[in-house]
Image 1 (cartoon, rainbow, N blue to C red):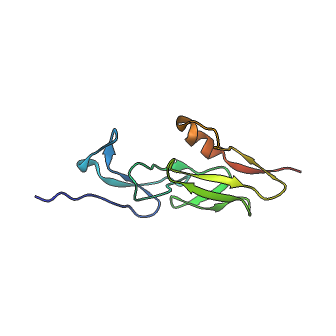
Image 2 (spheres, rainbow, N blue to C red):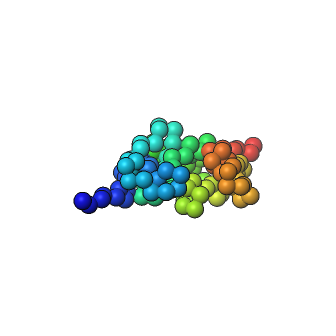
Image 3 (cartoon, rainbow, N blue to C red):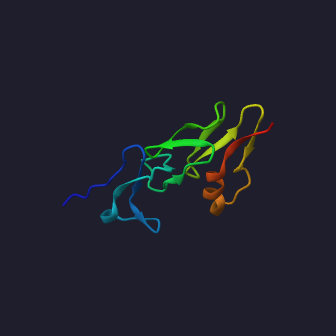
Length: 118
C-alpha cells in the first residue's frame, strides 16, 4: 500500500508532519494560524505559526505589511520569523533580533516595531 506525504499547506496554514522532530505519517495535517499569527512558509514542517509583530499587520495567517510605512521586513527562514531590518527616519527600531538566543526569538520577534521619536 502506498503512503502519502503532505508536502505543503495553503498560505497562512502551518504544515504539521512531525512529532519530536521525527516524521509522523498519521499526524500530517494543515493547521490554520490564528488571526493574530502568521506563518512564513507553509511548505516547511519545522516552521510554526508566530505571533504577529507589534509593528506589522497580519491577516489570514500572513504578514501583510508594516504598520509604519517605510519599515522593511525580511523573511528569516532559519528562524521561521520575519525580521524588522530598518525603520524610516524619525523612527527607532525596537526588538532587534541581532543577538537573541534561539529560545528567545519568538518573544522578541513579536515585539519588533518602529516607534516614533519626536
